[in-house]
Length: 525
Image (cartoon, rainbow, N blue to C red; front, side, top):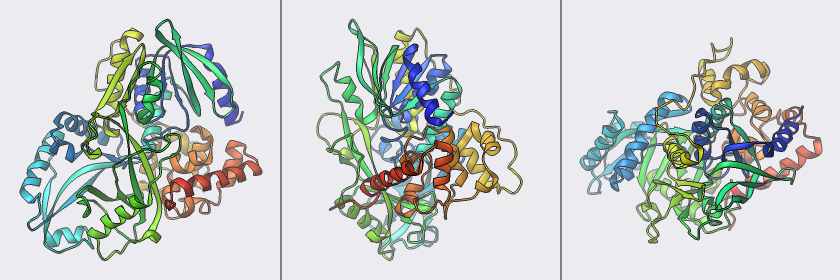
């Protein structure tokens, strides 16, 4: 039975059940709710109108952090919760979530100096329960961050936060929920609410693959659609609460800007914070923070001003690099679901706390940070509890089960094996058993194995080529032209695992190339 046949069977069975809970949204918030709901024994369905992590959760800054600036803004509770969850994820998902050093350089006569910053970092680390901050004198700092500008430089403060592959984090949480009994389908759109009197009792759905429609019933519906949350909620209440903010990033070759740790700096134009950091063998520059006023159904993309803004920010800190447009491998832009204070304030000063509302049995959850997805999920379920007849307690259960993958196969380097465990989690052993030995080789100069593409096609609900290359693996962000010409086995895998014909593969290649050029490369003038 093909992957498409399995999907069609799942779709046709949806209306045959009375679900305890339907979750709309396949980003980190939705899958986080699903993870907690299924282990409470709830019969749970999760749907996503495009692909898992398509909206925001594949386009974040990849940082699992408390947010040093949030503590400076007085959001102590948010910072504490974020840091507590950061430490949990570092323990539970080693390799997928990795600790990294962050440097902040100090200059003569420029605020903040060494001591004010050290006090801030000490408070930050106190909330996290760690102690790893240190001041580096000028020469020691330049050895760690070569090429950094030196005029009036006194030294730099260093502390740690963490990085992740955000889309793989979503997939691993989803895998855990499916193992607990979750039913989940992507490319399923909730077109309307089904009401029983004045209360939400289900959804009208459209399968965007087949065009078919269905009606499903549930005791409760959770709207976890992030920046899109107001759409469904406005069917019940005339209110707009989400302020979509766009954050954009540039991907640069590590040879052009080599870094082993992250650098925080203030942009010379407006003083906004800019991060420059290593990720997946490349160097990332970001992020912007702008009101996103274009069609939310079209993928977010940076504009020309944003691109040059980030290049100026990086070149100000690395003047000898002379980075230009020709150095950009790819770009990405995501829309953050920020709950607005409604006062038109500076986007960077809006709170990153989450909010949860109950409107006639439609529980809407939005806002918040990638790092705190577990706490956000628990708050959503607590508000849904009266409809479900459950009690929700934070028993501090692990999000991730112990993978138990056994030993590394003969001939596989330990670092390659560790990376597979971090990305595949509970499925690592099955991966090593099923996947061909001759495909345990990396694609181009990345760490991604050819076998990871085959596994994703077979087991991770790939519907389109961009699902595979931009989200299941990240080759579309790491390789020129989105990686299309760097994977010699790609067409073979697509034919064997997805049963795509030569014509369909050709059509998907054209579709993917268009998406990549429009939304993941250089902006048009």
